[in-house]
Image 1 (cartoon, rainbow, N blue to C red):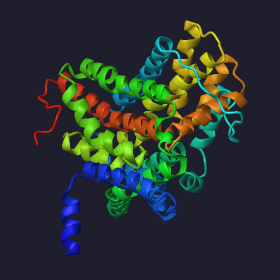
Image 2 (cartoon, helix red, strand yellow):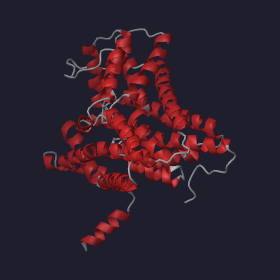
Image 3 (cartoon, rainbow, N blue to C red):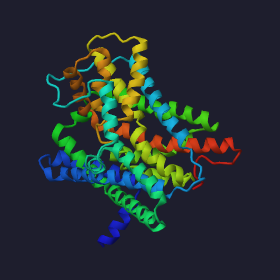
Image 4 (tube, rainbow, N blue to C red):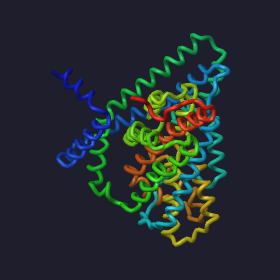
Length: 412
């Protein structure tokens, strides 16, 4: 009997199961607000994702590079350009929207006890030090820049290893991918726990406060996903981009919205790239790389909240400074942590452009954590879905250039 119930449950789409989990968590929060044991499901789910994601990225990239054979063509250069261009345009769009719809914040009296970067030089120095971090330490602390660096080096080093050694690395990579799939299949229970904890601790107001700020943030991210990115894809492939855009948002973005981790969403993106018929030698590297540096949603968050802080303090921002903010938010976003709320700690850096002191800037970070339930989910959905979108756009553009036939969405 129980086996049949489990089989029927698994036949329901993951998205529908997640929605059911949200509803259950919401209902339980109102009926049993003191049942703290329910919230632990959310902590276990997030903890499992955080534990496996660094190892997944490490072995996935190392395996992909070690398996790559000389002469195999990839589109990595075009993909990296698209990643950087998309992140910059996201920051610029957020700046424009903030000028059109200026916002003010209600700042808390005390800032959180966090240590923000003091300037762009510190951010660059931290970035370089993270690159050469001890590989074991990088894995332990989920330092994805360091993980990526050592995975690339080991991947190239293993290219001369025996076939059996490279097969072992590939098998380990596949094993971690399967583990993450298992964890994601438990997402409905984890989401129920997260929803319960949010409502039980802060009440329904925790989801409805700062409504106007959330509308601007989410609206800007939707503008990037549904207008800016499609324009970029159209320029690349010269075909209607929306079937591909909507496919990526549906199959990748929705899952990333609930997992709130680009790294944990890598197996989902790899499967989607496979469905789209993309070159495995390309996407096996570009997808983990995108989970680290393709951060359009983070650029939006940094720009919007920084300009909201400037407007709150009646600081006039001229056009040159706004353009510099766009570049700064894009560069900062590329180095943002892949964990929940990772982009928020870079807000003080952007605020320093306007002479806003760190104690006030950290109050803005506090606002970011308050709205993080929705903001971070939307940010991750945009980031992760764009990884597949730009990977596909680069490959389809190359096929168009070579005069090859291609279909931008799968047949099934």
